Image 1 (cartoon, rainbow, N blue to C red):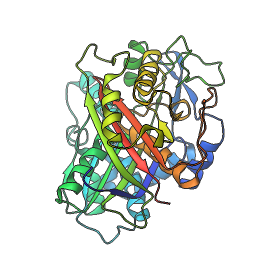
Image 2: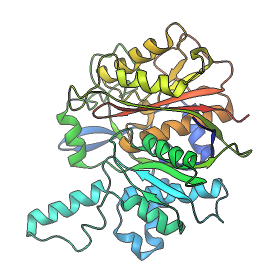
Image 3: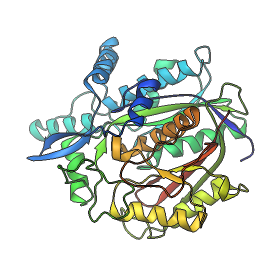
Length: 387
Protein backbone atom coordinates (compact mmCIF):
# COMPACT_ATOMS: atom_id res chain seq x y z
CA UNK A 1 0.00 0.00 0.00
CA UNK A 2 1.26 3.46 -0.89
CA UNK A 3 -0.19 5.03 2.24
CA UNK A 4 -2.42 4.29 5.20
CA UNK A 5 -6.17 4.59 4.75
CA UNK A 6 -8.30 5.49 7.78
CA UNK A 7 -11.77 4.10 8.46
CA UNK A 8 -13.49 6.95 10.29
CA UNK A 9 -17.06 5.69 10.37
CA UNK A 10 -19.04 2.50 9.87
CA UNK A 11 -22.67 1.54 10.29
CA UNK A 12 -24.76 -1.50 9.50
CA UNK A 13 -28.25 -2.94 9.33
CA UNK A 14 -28.63 -6.67 9.98
CA UNK A 15 -30.24 -9.27 12.20
CA UNK A 16 -27.78 -8.12 14.88
CA UNK A 17 -29.45 -4.71 15.07
CA UNK A 18 -28.48 -1.19 13.98
CA UNK A 19 -26.54 0.44 16.83
CA UNK A 20 -22.89 -0.33 17.51
CA UNK A 21 -23.63 -1.09 21.15
CA UNK A 22 -26.50 -3.43 20.30
CA UNK A 23 -24.46 -5.22 17.65
CA UNK A 24 -21.50 -5.76 19.99
CA UNK A 25 -23.82 -7.08 22.69
CA UNK A 26 -25.27 -9.59 20.23
CA UNK A 27 -21.79 -10.68 19.16
CA UNK A 28 -20.80 -11.32 22.77
CA UNK A 29 -23.61 -13.78 23.43
CA UNK A 30 -23.57 -17.29 21.98
CA UNK A 31 -27.03 -17.14 20.48
CA UNK A 32 -27.57 -17.08 16.73
CA UNK A 33 -30.00 -14.78 14.93
CA UNK A 34 -31.69 -17.55 12.97
CA UNK A 35 -35.42 -17.91 12.59
CA UNK A 36 -37.37 -20.28 10.36
CA UNK A 37 -39.78 -19.42 7.57
CA UNK A 38 -41.76 -21.58 5.18
CA UNK A 39 -40.37 -21.54 1.63
CA UNK A 40 -41.87 -24.03 -0.80
CA UNK A 41 -43.39 -26.06 2.02
CA UNK A 42 -40.08 -26.38 3.87
CA UNK A 43 -39.12 -24.71 7.14
CA UNK A 44 -36.02 -22.80 6.08
CA UNK A 45 -33.42 -21.07 8.29
CA UNK A 46 -32.92 -17.36 7.58
CA UNK A 47 -31.54 -14.35 9.47
CA UNK A 48 -33.97 -11.48 9.00
CA UNK A 49 -34.15 -8.05 10.57
CA UNK A 50 -35.85 -7.86 13.93
CA UNK A 51 -39.29 -6.27 14.13
CA UNK A 52 -37.79 -3.15 15.70
CA UNK A 53 -35.18 -2.76 12.96
CA UNK A 54 -37.73 -3.49 10.23
CA UNK A 55 -39.88 -0.74 11.74
CA UNK A 56 -36.96 1.68 11.32
CA UNK A 57 -36.66 0.71 7.65
CA UNK A 58 -40.43 1.05 7.18
CA UNK A 59 -40.28 4.53 8.69
CA UNK A 60 -37.51 5.41 6.25
CA UNK A 61 -39.66 4.17 3.36
CA UNK A 62 -42.51 6.41 4.51
CA UNK A 63 -40.25 9.41 4.98
CA UNK A 64 -40.17 10.29 1.30
CA UNK A 65 -42.68 9.35 -1.39
CA UNK A 66 -39.76 8.58 -3.73
CA UNK A 67 -38.65 5.87 -1.29
CA UNK A 68 -41.98 4.05 -1.43
CA UNK A 69 -41.11 2.27 -4.69
CA UNK A 70 -37.56 1.24 -3.70
CA UNK A 71 -36.31 -2.24 -2.88
CA UNK A 72 -35.25 -3.10 0.67
CA UNK A 73 -31.66 -3.42 -0.50
CA UNK A 74 -31.66 0.28 -1.38
CA UNK A 75 -33.27 1.34 1.90
CA UNK A 76 -30.83 -0.77 3.93
CA UNK A 77 -27.99 1.01 2.14
CA UNK A 78 -29.47 4.49 2.58
CA UNK A 79 -29.95 3.99 6.31
CA UNK A 80 -26.45 2.56 6.86
CA UNK A 81 -24.86 5.30 4.75
CA UNK A 82 -26.62 8.06 6.69
CA UNK A 83 -25.41 6.67 9.99
CA UNK A 84 -21.85 6.05 8.76
CA UNK A 85 -21.54 9.64 7.52
CA UNK A 86 -22.92 10.88 10.83
CA UNK A 87 -20.44 8.73 12.77
CA UNK A 88 -17.54 10.05 10.69
CA UNK A 89 -18.80 13.62 11.07
CA UNK A 90 -18.98 14.11 7.30
CA UNK A 91 -22.18 16.17 7.41
CA UNK A 92 -20.37 19.12 5.84
CA UNK A 93 -18.67 17.01 3.13
CA UNK A 94 -20.22 17.14 -0.32
CA UNK A 95 -17.50 15.71 -2.54
CA UNK A 96 -16.98 12.16 -1.28
CA UNK A 97 -17.18 9.22 -3.66
CA UNK A 98 -19.58 6.33 -3.27
CA UNK A 99 -19.20 2.64 -4.15
CA UNK A 100 -21.92 0.45 -2.66
CA UNK A 101 -22.27 -2.92 -4.34
CA UNK A 102 -24.70 -5.82 -4.22
CA UNK A 103 -24.63 -9.40 -5.41
CA UNK A 104 -28.35 -9.60 -6.26
CA UNK A 105 -29.51 -6.01 -6.09
CA UNK A 106 -33.26 -5.34 -6.01
CA UNK A 107 -34.13 -9.01 -5.53
CA UNK A 108 -37.62 -8.63 -4.10
CA UNK A 109 -38.73 -6.00 -6.58
CA UNK A 110 -37.30 -7.84 -9.58
CA UNK A 111 -39.17 -11.01 -8.66
CA UNK A 112 -42.37 -9.04 -8.02
CA UNK A 113 -42.22 -7.24 -11.37
CA UNK A 114 -41.32 -10.40 -13.26
CA UNK A 115 -44.25 -12.26 -11.71
CA UNK A 116 -46.60 -9.44 -12.74
CA UNK A 117 -45.22 -9.57 -16.28
CA UNK A 118 -45.81 -13.31 -16.52
CA UNK A 119 -49.36 -12.83 -15.28
CA UNK A 120 -50.48 -9.93 -17.49
CA UNK A 121 -47.80 -9.55 -20.17
CA UNK A 122 -47.02 -5.96 -19.20
CA UNK A 123 -44.21 -4.37 -17.23
CA UNK A 124 -44.76 -1.78 -14.50
CA UNK A 125 -43.52 1.75 -15.24
CA UNK A 126 -40.86 1.71 -12.51
CA UNK A 127 -39.69 -1.85 -13.08
CA UNK A 128 -36.51 -0.82 -14.88
CA UNK A 129 -35.27 2.20 -12.87
CA UNK A 130 -35.92 0.52 -9.52
CA UNK A 131 -34.09 -2.72 -10.36
CA UNK A 132 -30.93 -1.46 -12.08
CA UNK A 133 -27.60 -2.38 -10.48
CA UNK A 134 -26.69 1.26 -9.85
CA UNK A 135 -29.87 1.85 -7.88
CA UNK A 136 -28.27 1.57 -4.43
CA UNK A 137 -25.30 3.90 -4.94
CA UNK A 138 -27.38 6.39 -6.92
CA UNK A 139 -30.06 6.72 -4.24
CA UNK A 140 -27.44 7.05 -1.51
CA UNK A 141 -25.74 9.80 -3.52
CA UNK A 142 -29.10 11.54 -3.98
CA UNK A 143 -29.94 11.23 -0.31
CA UNK A 144 -26.56 12.51 0.91
CA UNK A 145 -26.23 15.13 -1.86
CA UNK A 146 -22.63 14.28 -2.68
CA UNK A 147 -20.86 15.64 -5.77
CA UNK A 148 -18.27 12.86 -5.91
CA UNK A 149 -18.08 9.84 -8.24
CA UNK A 150 -20.82 7.22 -7.86
CA UNK A 151 -19.94 3.60 -8.67
CA UNK A 152 -21.85 0.32 -8.57
CA UNK A 153 -20.68 -3.23 -9.15
CA UNK A 154 -21.44 -6.86 -8.41
CA UNK A 155 -18.75 -9.44 -7.76
CA UNK A 156 -21.01 -11.90 -5.95
CA UNK A 157 -20.05 -12.52 -2.32
CA UNK A 158 -16.84 -10.46 -2.35
CA UNK A 159 -18.68 -7.38 -3.66
CA UNK A 160 -18.37 -5.24 -0.51
CA UNK A 161 -14.65 -5.84 -0.06
CA UNK A 162 -14.12 -5.05 -3.74
CA UNK A 163 -15.84 -1.74 -2.95
CA UNK A 164 -13.19 -1.22 -0.26
CA UNK A 165 -10.48 -1.95 -2.86
CA UNK A 166 -12.03 0.61 -5.22
CA UNK A 167 -12.24 3.22 -2.48
CA UNK A 168 -8.61 2.68 -1.54
CA UNK A 169 -7.56 2.99 -5.21
CA UNK A 170 -9.41 6.31 -5.62
CA UNK A 171 -7.90 7.71 -2.42
CA UNK A 172 -4.36 6.61 -3.19
CA UNK A 173 -4.61 8.02 -6.70
CA UNK A 174 -5.37 11.46 -5.28
CA UNK A 175 -8.63 11.71 -7.23
CA UNK A 176 -10.59 11.75 -3.97
CA UNK A 177 -9.94 12.41 -0.29
CA UNK A 178 -12.96 10.58 1.12
CA UNK A 179 -14.96 7.57 -0.08
CA UNK A 180 -18.07 5.76 1.11
CA UNK A 181 -17.88 1.98 0.52
CA UNK A 182 -19.92 -1.09 1.34
CA UNK A 183 -22.56 -3.55 0.28
CA UNK A 184 -26.27 -4.19 0.69
CA UNK A 185 -28.37 -7.30 0.23
CA UNK A 186 -32.02 -8.27 0.69
CA UNK A 187 -32.05 -11.87 -0.62
CA UNK A 188 -34.72 -13.50 1.54
CA UNK A 189 -37.05 -14.34 -1.32
CA UNK A 190 -38.49 -17.65 -2.44
CA UNK A 191 -36.67 -17.74 -5.78
CA UNK A 192 -33.26 -16.78 -4.34
CA UNK A 193 -33.48 -19.38 -1.60
CA UNK A 194 -34.66 -21.97 -4.15
CA UNK A 195 -31.51 -21.25 -6.16
CA UNK A 196 -29.29 -21.92 -3.13
CA UNK A 197 -31.18 -25.12 -2.34
CA UNK A 198 -30.76 -26.24 -5.93
CA UNK A 199 -26.99 -25.94 -5.45
CA UNK A 200 -27.26 -28.30 -2.45
CA UNK A 201 -25.45 -25.85 -0.18
CA UNK A 202 -28.36 -24.60 1.93
CA UNK A 203 -28.74 -25.69 5.56
CA UNK A 204 -31.35 -28.34 6.20
CA UNK A 205 -30.79 -29.01 9.92
CA UNK A 206 -33.53 -27.46 12.05
CA UNK A 207 -32.99 -29.21 15.39
CA UNK A 208 -29.35 -28.34 16.06
CA UNK A 209 -28.43 -25.57 18.48
CA UNK A 210 -26.39 -24.12 15.61
CA UNK A 211 -28.00 -24.83 12.21
CA UNK A 212 -25.05 -23.17 10.43
CA UNK A 213 -21.79 -24.96 11.19
CA UNK A 214 -19.50 -22.35 9.63
CA UNK A 215 -15.88 -23.10 10.50
CA UNK A 216 -16.70 -26.58 11.78
CA UNK A 217 -14.17 -28.46 9.68
CA UNK A 218 -15.58 -31.86 10.72
CA UNK A 219 -19.11 -31.31 9.37
CA UNK A 220 -20.44 -33.75 6.79
CA UNK A 221 -23.16 -31.62 5.20
CA UNK A 222 -23.45 -28.08 3.89
CA UNK A 223 -24.99 -25.67 6.38
CA UNK A 224 -25.06 -22.27 4.72
CA UNK A 225 -28.16 -20.11 5.12
CA UNK A 226 -29.05 -16.59 4.00
CA UNK A 227 -29.34 -13.36 5.94
CA UNK A 228 -30.20 -9.80 4.97
CA UNK A 229 -28.40 -6.58 5.73
CA UNK A 230 -26.06 -3.80 4.69
CA UNK A 231 -22.98 -2.05 6.00
CA UNK A 232 -21.22 1.12 4.87
CA UNK A 233 -17.79 2.47 5.86
CA UNK A 234 -16.20 5.91 5.52
CA UNK A 235 -12.65 5.89 4.16
CA UNK A 236 -10.25 8.84 4.37
CA UNK A 237 -6.81 9.23 2.84
CA UNK A 238 -3.88 9.14 5.24
CA UNK A 239 -3.81 8.77 9.00
CA UNK A 240 -6.74 10.36 10.85
CA UNK A 241 -6.73 10.69 14.63
CA UNK A 242 -10.41 9.72 14.84
CA UNK A 243 -9.90 6.53 12.82
CA UNK A 244 -11.76 3.45 14.06
CA UNK A 245 -9.11 1.32 12.36
CA UNK A 246 -6.43 1.66 9.70
CA UNK A 247 -6.21 -0.24 6.42
CA UNK A 248 -2.59 -1.35 6.21
CA UNK A 249 -2.85 -3.86 3.38
CA UNK A 250 -5.11 -5.02 0.58
CA UNK A 251 -4.99 -8.20 -1.47
CA UNK A 252 -6.97 -9.70 -4.31
CA UNK A 253 -6.80 -12.65 -6.68
CA UNK A 254 -8.99 -14.65 -9.04
CA UNK A 255 -8.68 -18.37 -9.66
CA UNK A 256 -9.07 -20.02 -13.06
CA UNK A 257 -12.66 -21.26 -13.07
CA UNK A 258 -12.94 -25.01 -12.43
CA UNK A 259 -16.61 -24.97 -11.40
CA UNK A 260 -19.28 -22.27 -11.32
CA UNK A 261 -19.51 -22.15 -7.53
CA UNK A 262 -16.34 -23.67 -6.08
CA UNK A 263 -12.73 -22.73 -5.45
CA UNK A 264 -9.76 -25.11 -5.43
CA UNK A 265 -9.21 -27.37 -2.43
CA UNK A 266 -6.26 -25.22 -1.34
CA UNK A 267 -8.03 -21.94 -2.21
CA UNK A 268 -5.17 -20.57 -4.33
CA UNK A 269 -7.03 -17.26 -4.64
CA UNK A 270 -7.04 -16.78 -0.85
CA UNK A 271 -3.38 -17.70 -0.59
CA UNK A 272 -2.53 -14.99 -3.11
CA UNK A 273 -4.86 -12.36 -1.65
CA UNK A 274 -3.64 -12.89 1.93
CA UNK A 275 0.03 -12.80 0.90
CA UNK A 276 -0.61 -9.59 -1.01
CA UNK A 277 -2.41 -8.01 1.95
CA UNK A 278 0.44 -9.01 4.28
CA UNK A 279 3.13 -7.45 2.10
CA UNK A 280 6.29 -7.28 4.21
CA UNK A 281 4.45 -7.93 7.49
CA UNK A 282 5.46 -11.17 9.20
CA UNK A 283 2.72 -13.77 9.57
CA UNK A 284 3.27 -13.93 13.34
CA UNK A 285 2.11 -10.30 13.62
CA UNK A 286 -1.46 -11.22 12.63
CA UNK A 287 -3.66 -11.73 15.68
CA UNK A 288 -6.89 -12.94 14.05
CA UNK A 289 -8.60 -13.69 10.76
CA UNK A 290 -12.31 -13.09 10.12
CA UNK A 291 -12.91 -15.84 7.59
CA UNK A 292 -15.40 -15.89 4.73
CA UNK A 293 -16.41 -19.43 5.87
CA UNK A 294 -19.99 -19.64 4.55
CA UNK A 295 -20.75 -22.96 6.23
CA UNK A 296 -20.22 -25.22 3.21
CA UNK A 297 -18.09 -28.32 3.57
CA UNK A 298 -15.67 -27.59 0.72
CA UNK A 299 -15.63 -23.79 1.05
CA UNK A 300 -14.75 -23.68 4.74
CA UNK A 301 -12.06 -26.35 4.40
CA UNK A 302 -10.49 -24.76 1.32
CA UNK A 303 -10.12 -21.40 3.07
CA UNK A 304 -8.63 -23.11 6.12
CA UNK A 305 -6.16 -24.96 3.89
CA UNK A 306 -5.14 -21.63 2.36
CA UNK A 307 -4.56 -20.16 5.82
CA UNK A 308 -2.39 -23.15 6.77
CA UNK A 309 -0.39 -22.73 3.55
CA UNK A 310 0.25 -19.03 4.24
CA UNK A 311 0.69 -19.04 8.03
CA UNK A 312 2.22 -22.46 8.59
CA UNK A 313 2.57 -23.17 12.31
CA UNK A 314 1.56 -19.67 13.38
CA UNK A 315 -2.15 -19.77 12.50
CA UNK A 316 -3.94 -16.79 14.09
CA UNK A 317 -7.21 -17.07 15.98
CA UNK A 318 -9.99 -17.79 13.47
CA UNK A 319 -13.57 -16.61 13.52
CA UNK A 320 -16.57 -15.90 11.32
CA UNK A 321 -20.01 -14.34 11.83
CA UNK A 322 -22.01 -16.45 9.39
CA UNK A 323 -23.05 -19.03 11.99
CA UNK A 324 -24.87 -16.15 13.67
CA UNK A 325 -26.16 -13.83 10.89
CA UNK A 326 -26.11 -16.03 7.81
CA UNK A 327 -24.55 -15.32 4.45
CA UNK A 328 -25.52 -11.85 3.28
CA UNK A 329 -23.97 -12.29 -0.16
CA UNK A 330 -22.58 -8.95 -1.37
CA UNK A 331 -22.79 -7.35 2.09
CA UNK A 332 -21.01 -10.16 3.91
CA UNK A 333 -17.45 -8.83 3.58
CA UNK A 334 -18.22 -5.40 5.03
CA UNK A 335 -20.18 -6.96 7.91
CA UNK A 336 -17.09 -9.09 8.61
CA UNK A 337 -14.98 -5.93 8.51
CA UNK A 338 -17.34 -4.34 11.04
CA UNK A 339 -16.81 -7.33 13.35
CA UNK A 340 -13.04 -6.86 13.06
CA UNK A 341 -13.34 -3.14 13.90
CA UNK A 342 -15.46 -3.92 16.96
CA UNK A 343 -12.95 -6.53 18.17
CA UNK A 344 -10.13 -3.98 17.79
CA UNK A 345 -12.17 -1.35 19.62
CA UNK A 346 -13.14 -3.52 22.59
CA UNK A 347 -9.96 -5.62 22.52
CA UNK A 348 -11.96 -8.81 22.72
CA UNK A 349 -11.90 -11.74 20.31
CA UNK A 350 -15.32 -13.13 19.34
CA UNK A 351 -15.02 -16.91 18.89
CA UNK A 352 -17.25 -19.36 17.07
CA UNK A 353 -19.00 -21.25 19.89
CA UNK A 354 -18.69 -24.80 18.58
CA UNK A 355 -14.97 -24.83 17.70
CA UNK A 356 -11.87 -24.17 19.76
CA UNK A 357 -8.91 -22.13 18.57
CA UNK A 358 -5.49 -23.50 19.42
CA UNK A 359 -4.35 -20.03 20.47
CA UNK A 360 -6.26 -16.97 21.64
CA UNK A 361 -4.83 -13.49 21.18
CA UNK A 362 -3.95 -11.60 24.35
CA UNK A 363 -4.04 -8.34 22.42
CA UNK A 364 -5.65 -7.46 19.10
CA UNK A 365 -3.65 -5.20 16.82
CA UNK A 366 -3.78 -6.66 13.30
CA UNK A 367 -6.72 -8.56 11.79
CA UNK A 368 -7.24 -9.92 8.26
CA UNK A 369 -10.74 -10.07 6.75
CA UNK A 370 -11.44 -12.48 3.88
CA UNK A 371 -14.21 -12.67 1.31
CA UNK A 372 -14.64 -14.66 -1.88
CA UNK A 373 -17.37 -14.94 -4.48
CA UNK A 374 -18.51 -17.47 -7.07
CA UNK A 375 -15.67 -17.95 -9.52
CA UNK A 376 -12.88 -17.48 -6.98
CA UNK A 377 -12.84 -13.66 -6.69
CA UNK A 378 -10.99 -13.36 -3.38
CA UNK A 379 -10.22 -10.21 -1.38
CA UNK A 380 -8.23 -9.84 1.84
CA UNK A 381 -8.07 -6.63 3.89
CA UNK A 382 -5.50 -6.09 6.66
CA UNK A 383 -6.74 -3.84 9.47
CA UNK A 384 -4.62 -2.35 12.22
CA UNK A 385 -5.77 -0.84 15.51
CA UNK A 386 -5.56 2.94 15.92
CA UNK A 387 -5.03 2.60 19.66
